[in-house]
Amino acid sequence: MAETFFSPCPRGLEALLAEELVTFGARAARAVHGGVSWEGDWDACRRANLESRLATRVLWRVGQGRYRAEVDIYKLAYSVTWAKWFTADDTIRIYVTAQKSPLKSLEFITLRVKDAVCDHFRTVAGRRPNVDTADPAVRIHLFLTVDTATLYVDTSGEPLYKRGYKPAAVEAPLKENLAAGILRLTGWQADEALVDPMCGSGTFLIEAAQMALDIAPGLGRGFAFERLRIHDRGAWAALRRAAEQRRKPARVLPIFGSDVVGEWVRRSRMNLDAAGLADCVRLDRADVLERTPPAAAGVMVANPPYGVRIGEAEELLAFYPRLGDALKQRWGGWRCYLFSADPELPKRIGLKASRRTPLFNGALECRLFEYRMVAGSNRERTPRPQE
Image (cartoon, rainbow, N blue to C red; front, side, top):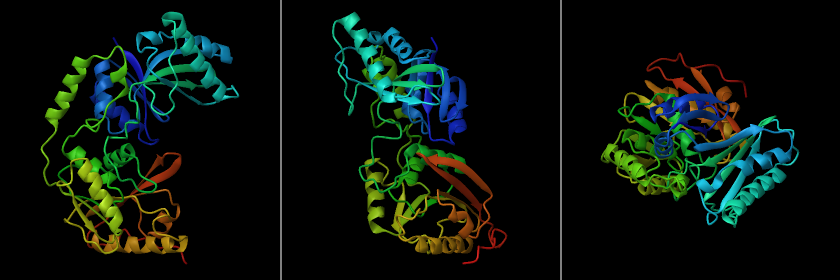
């Protein structure tokens, strides 16, 4: 029997996610603002949780209806057969998001949904589940449009970009599913050289290595659907076993990382080790302005500083022209990708972008700039603004 799901993702990756979900068995996958609505069976849901590199969650639709006032939402939430899927011993948390809803208080709506779920359990089981805002067994999501309310049970639990490793984070981290989406947008293939010369905590490196070795990103973690009463343990075990069998043995990959700051190199190494990939990626301390490419051609991808890691704005503005010079002098024959929210980067770097892809890092609007560096030519050079 087909169920209906919604998978949110970083904005800008919706079309890529729709394509990915189809490979897991999704049907009627439709990219919308902020995610993909789709249909499928529970195997497709389980696979999406285990194998999706781009989704943030997999939400299972359990109720939908029109509303005009808070009481309509209470009635909708009360009518859902919650007790079929979890028990009064399971803790819950309610999440409410809205687009153009006329209702004034989302906090009040959150309480009404919680009341409806608890009242449902009192009616059918004689007692109610408790709320746990830190680590609930069941996450219930309500999404409101101007006149429609949709209820979902979260089958993922922790966001899917939490792969189950990475003990050493750094400031302003790049979410793993956004990094995976950026790698997809570059067109990088596993037999190509890949370099991240500003590797920070190593997110691009780890995601690329997992792609190259066909490691399902969810193999190191658990999921909320495992706690539901309808969970099919046998089917889930078979899916995990198939994913484990597809995983290729660890080997040295043409993936290279570096950073000018030794502490970030140490953190990248720690995270690679935690992901079981320490022997797959070559890591060094080096300045992006001075390092040389490890091959005649390949993909360079970087998330340059937005001002925090370099320091003062003046120093950052001076860095971009030097970065452009370094790419031009050393990286001929490479496809170079810079992901940035800084509007000064394209003005100052002195290179003509062949493509600019809008993406969002959380609420922050960014661009992925593609620079195809032509070996032995100055055709990529564009005049810089006068200082």
